[in-house]
Image (tube, rainbow, N blue to C red; front, side, top):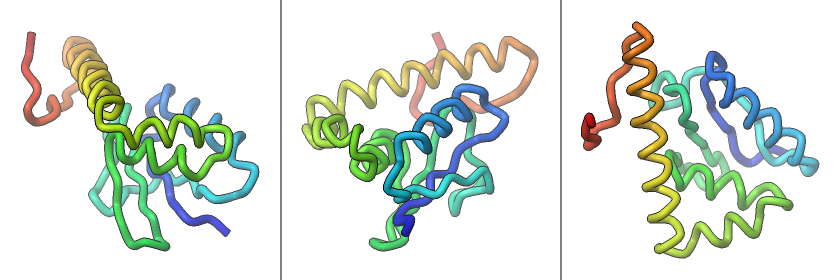
Length: 122
């Protein structure tokens, strides 16, 4: 029985590819994939929102990634590493940097998307 729902953006090719890979590794059927708006609203490209129905909690960013990893057996070692604050900080920093890069590309390609709050334009 699925315990978490992974919300992702269906118009983002990388998101679709990663969701497909995650579904392929989830042989225990613990994750439900969804392209519907999350409880937070529409999921931006390059991001995920995870809803844990059992614990009635919502996760975003590196915490969402960690939650998914803890449910998929082959990703469990990565999930355990993401519990370590230094690793979580590094992964979170890399994630924010890639979001800023994607946002800059999106803005330069003529489409509009707000930069994540707290990020700087360079």
